[in-house]
Image 1: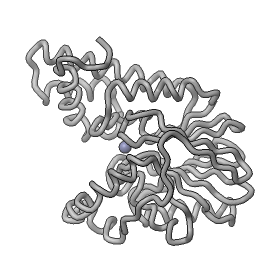
Image 2 (image 1 turned 90 degrees about the vertical axis):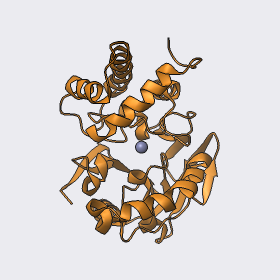
Image 3 (image 1 turned 45 degrees about the vertical axis):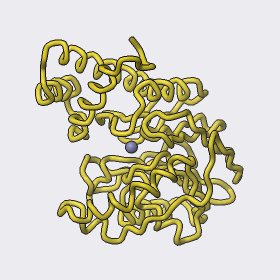
Image 4 (image 1 turned 30 degrees about the vertical axis):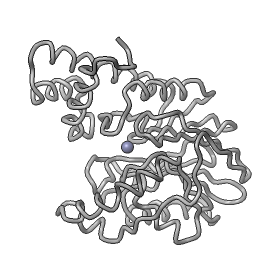
Length: 286
Ligand SMILES: [Zn+2]
């Protein structure tokens, strides 16, 4: 496991993650801590208890207050499988109802399969699957001395997406509605929904946007993500028109976004965007 990257975005808000895009780096995902008077609200927990322990060690440099609440932005393993570490210490795990449903349905099989793969087997050996004990449909407010709003913007990156807004700090924690210098993962995405999710984030009075993967930034990270979706649609559409196959199209996407992490997501991008563009009556953009 490499060096933990720490970014302090406000007096009481920190973002931790690992540079890189493999399992040891938790695929570059972020974990965010909001330190309030009555305890810590943590948003996402990275891929494993080992990652969660690294975050906790960094958190303990800032405060000795307990982690009261862990909010999951969606069900993907790189955001959820470290949760057991904090739940065992008494934190309440919170997620959208559909996030909990996908965790219950998908994770046992996924964990068994991935423990059989050499690259992550050791890291995942101590994962214990835990489910959220508190769920919501539209949103939830947390009042622990700092106002924390959790909102479901509809099915965007996944059916159970949530983002977190700190109105007093003008910070939005976007989950995987926003990837910053990482390729977007369209595996479970609704392609019209990802744009609605970006609109919901844009409508906030936020100054700082923490992406699901990569470094925090200003509103430009939302613009970059919207432009990325445009570019992907255009490249796949033109590729289809020209009779190009997966390898050629994913190569073009890689060239279009040099230096972006998670190139391993590109074959899924090709398949999902192709399927969406070929759908006869899709609800998205023309
Ligand atoms: Zn994700």
